[in-house]
Image (cartoon, rainbow, N blue to C red; front, side, top):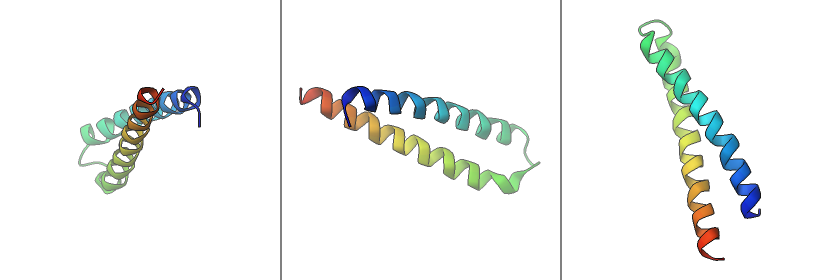
Length: 66
């Protein structure tokens, strides 16, 4: 994957992560309604932010290796 491809992937994932964060926020504000969805939404949000962090670290390494 090139640096530009990685930047594009990060941009798309960042947008999705922002939406997941808002979904989690909305779910939390509505508690106790839909409390049974809380763990799934939280886990998905956590996973996407972990992946985003991983890709940002990869980008940083690729850019410093240039």
